Length: 257
Image (cartoon, rainbow, N blue to C red; front, side, top):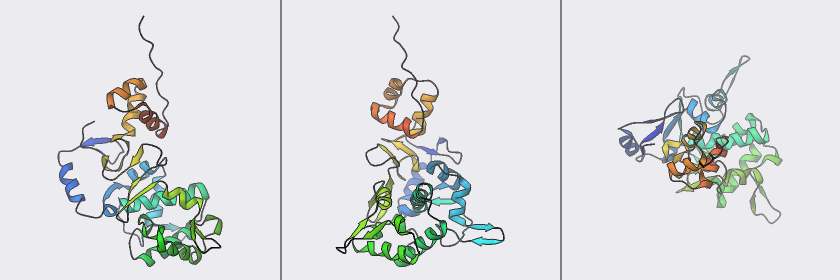
């Protein structure tokens, strides 16, 4: 792939001569405000239903009742998904998919933290996760009536605020720089797979190579050793990329006698 490859709206990779100009513009705004995806592509990278992501972003009407958005303060009608919203969707996905937390509780929780911080993407900021900022999380958990077994933090008998497993699960997959979430490690920080707004325009990648590109080559029948050589990666990198894409490596071709 060329160094200017990016994801298209269909989830495939494309190149463009003006990507450098676009990147220059992107660098002038906050990383959290960068519109890297539309809802279809964000859902593809997050591995969730586009309709569910749209519901979280925009809310909607069901059975005559309007439900407020979960991530956005109010509906905007925009299909663009900034990096900050993408990070928050990743947080929500873990709570909804793994812990079955109600959207009503999560909606109140995010709204309370947003109001306390005065920022549009409260969960994509480091402030509520470290130091005295953790008290914001504890307070929001109380006010939103989030069930205690689903809290991200709790107060020990000593008065120290501790992370719970759900909170640790989120933080161990996110890198913060200057208070902003700048990178996601979808399989944990021990894995080489990253989702970074400055690498391949937010596509899952390993050492700058999109995991999808690695998987496509294996799907085409290339043995894993050839893929390692073509992309100049380590064997462990390619294995991690294939595991992330849920692709079985092609069997090694026997050498000719």
